[in-house]
Image (cartoon, rainbow, N blue to C red):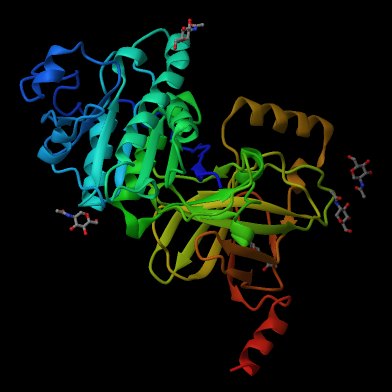
Length: 425
Ligand SMILES: *[C@@H]1O[C@H](CO)[C@@H](O)[C@H](O)[C@H]1NC(C)=O
Ligand SMILES: *[C@@H]1O[C@H](CO)[C@@H](O)[C@H](O)[C@H]1NC(C)=O
Ligand SMILES: *[C@@H]1O[C@H](CO)[C@@H](O)[C@H](O)[C@H]1NC(C)=O
Ligand SMILES: *[C@@H]1O[C@H](CO)[C@@H](O)[C@H](O)[C@H]1NC(C)=O
Ligand SMILES: *[C@@H]1O[C@H](CO)[C@@H](O)[C@H](O)[C@H]1NC(C)=O
């Protein structure tokens, strides 16, 4: 059986997260002072791949180097053979130093798994190269890790099942090679890949977040593409289509190449609450196209949301049910009512032009009006579904500049289920 690999394809509304981030922690370069290393290692040339056991909370502490075949450092540094062992594998190192994310990850891992051995795989000499060369070196580094793991497997108590390889960007390739070359099956491999350039390092911080905020686990949902996710179509958890992300992810048999999507907050904790909104737009007037400028405000038992835009991916289809994705940063509790607002599009040249054109052609611009009787809502996080009916069933029409209120009602399609539930014990 292959080790589960979590690949996150991430995108979100908050771009440029890493820009202007906090200052790096401590010196990031490879340690200058080699005095603490065993003598035989000091004499030998510095190997291109080094295994650095982190033994202190202090990121400036250089830790213990574990040379292959030497038992003494394992003992001296308190390597716990029966505990979990993490190998953190960095990626391409354009600057030749280890990033701040690595120390954050080590610290978060230590907080979550007190007894674990945390080994940083330092392959800077092979990673601080032209990108193509660094890629070519990943196989070599994978081999080194596999040899280290095979050696550790000779020790009493050590089990490959307790090993978790965490590879970031090119480090994910390395982890993949290591997993293939090692004798046996590694317990877990996590490949942390970046989605887009503008979300630099978000994926790694999502992983750190998942270690630190176990009680605020972020959910991701399987979807064929981001387009469909943005439309709110993919909030299903059936057949393992959703999962917590990062460290809290449950082991499932993922279809190969299944992509998981989620929205995030701009900073930690990243967790948001996803909702799918299904709205049928009835159009009785001769309206063919409407300005898609709708907002919902959600009122819950714990909190109320802000005005949340109904993001329109293509265009709103009339006389049809449209699906939207909205999300809140706060847990609103159970939803009680929804306000739907249709804002006028203000002051853009485009509007002036279309208004002018409407005026000339006497088109139905002024007749923009739709009727909305109910909004069906599904929570991604709880998977519960609710229906919200227009407060005034006699007045379900809305035009730009107006709003409509909806309160929780029994969805006629669900009444049958409700009866069955009350009959059963
Ligand atoms: C080693 O790890 C095991 C398993 O996590 C734990 O039970 C044990 O107490 C640890 N030993 C030491 C000396 O920390
Ligand atoms: C890739 O690396 C190997 C050594 O691991 C080297 O022999 C080979 O020339 C490299 N190939 C390229 C295209 O750099
Ligand atoms: C929607 O349905 C109504 C009533 O059946 C009809 O008058 C109207 O033309 C339809 N609008 C569109 C855009 O299909
Ligand atoms: C509806 O609009 C279309 C296209 O602008 C127009 O041809 C048609 O006559 C209009 N129908 C009514 C009933 O106003
Ligand atoms: C229907 O609701 C809209 C928006 O709240 C309001 O402007 C309009 O006067 C109402 N019409 C009737 C007939 O109640």
